[in-house]
Image (cartoon, rainbow, N blue to C red; front, top):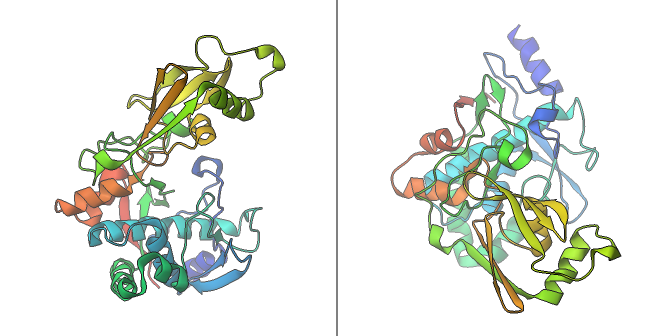
Length: 325
């Protein structure tokens, strides 16, 4: 029975990228004894177009190095390694049932807007500098090695462990306040220990004609919309933590994430101020604010929390389990 379960695990190898958790059938349920052979993950290098075959743990070193600053506390890096491993293994398990059409020959890709970021040796040397490269690489490898095989589950299913850079110290969001679907382990939590939260602020200023041009390119408006009257933008709905969920732009509805993307802002925690012909926007934090906050993880680690405490804080009601390989 144990061998048949292991064989089933290997056959169902891989994870559907880009398909949200709630849209998937449950192909990621773990048996009581989660034992598999050393997994090999097929990774599409989005820069070269080449498919790379590498061990899961080798791949994760490049992911953690790309996704989280290497100068973060080791416990935060461990939490990132576990989240990245869970993200990858979930897609490996689901790949056999439904390959992703954007990369049907690979379980995952290196495009961060679609999957997870990943860096090779030369990119890391350029990023860190050759003097720091070996020090940081050893640190990342330690984070991956000491958490080998660890994944995050909820009700014995691998979770979709979404994460983001910074919530700006304002706390994370419930999944349904960002993506419309309620996921029980993606509950908003306080994040008042975020590392350098006060620095997670981005501002950009437009004059009215330029702003109107940008917005007209972002929303389908008719010529009958006419010139701007009082102001182009009106907030309609914000999340309990203040992030913009819905607004009207030139009289038409738009979501907060769409608006953020149109203006090149870092988050949907957006405010603005009109002064004469100028409109100044400010966004706080970076990313969608659901799941694990990376800067918050580092803040917790610096205050003494270990990786288990970090993961339990950002993913509600989960359990960390070990895959054997």
